[in-house]
Length: 568
Image (tube, rainbow, N blue to C red):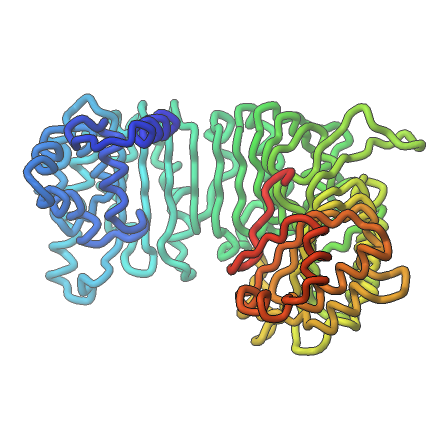
């Protein structure tokens, strides 16, 4: 993919028309792939994609018919309803030397499975196609195998699949398999275990992705993997391996580079105690997990990731305290380029994103503990306001020893579950801002959900968002005479970004505060489409314009506030 990106970049730099015939097969295939649907949609349109593209012009047709590499990838879009002739033609065009990318999807879909004659005909066609593919097993490099347990029985294809998976897949590097169905059919859970029991050997397998199916954690296959991704296994949670069982597996994966578990891991036994000796995963660079609080402690206190680069972990129902926060952060022992850390419960949510935490080996406080240097932090606080003040105070106390007060760029989002005023949560804002005395860039956004909050086990989303920070409320936060006002709390603030508010009064408030505290506000950015209309009519006073000019550039945009880039 790197070579493909380099070639596309070179073509763009030349800024000239390039004939189709001169493009590499990878670039041409990438162009064709843009005309098809997702790999998960196995329909006739997907299978006929090349045939449609061959009708674009004579040049396209010649290129499509003459390049084996293109046809070898086309097999990944195979739909068995095209019949064995279609499969045979694809294999013929791809040749016997080019590595194959093959997709097998077993389902009846709209083929009237209740009609015995139709069922027999479709089964026969799919069986013959699988038998044809089994003759090229040693040529297959990437295999996608999907099974719909709600529409057909695995036993219908046992003989042909047994033949297909009965040998040695000597060239197979990537195996992506799973169920297209979210029902509770036993076949959909046992599908991958059944494949492992056929005796198939994967000597070169490096990448494994399973979806909606159970896997045998006792298999030796995992020790050779560089990428392991397990998706959506919560539907079989009663038989799903626990964090302790996964821990035994992962400890053997010394070559693992990426570990992703998109689905809830069942809780481990309550009496389990992690070993005091940690295992090292020297190559792991990308980690994505969804854990309970107890299992998070088991995983993070048992493993070390010296080469970790990206970290995405959701921990359910745990309040960060001074006691458990060090455990949850013990994996940040080296430079982390991209960092995403989420803690979720039913009443609040907090996130730290976008390369925010950097570990400094040479920095220790008076107690000898290692501290963190934080350049950018984004906080999202949402949920019941009555819980917010105490939650944010606990959060702040937990984070302060770890260097959060060194944050220079802060993005603060307050998400309100109702239409009430934001002011009752002012204590929460003050509690948070008190921890960020080094902030120079501040982004503030306040929303409410018109239809209430949607809490999910994996992702928390808003069904609707509308701004609730009114002008008078913003003035309350910025122009108050008390020491808890926004600008008194942030003495180093020099860049302010505020979306969705009427700009006139806040601008006046900023001017007043600047003269009072001597703040060097350099940039004010508003995300408000009304500002273009109002700025000439309401800011016509020469005195106000002179005051604004002293603040530096006023950047005006019409859309929502942009996500800040790292170290902006």
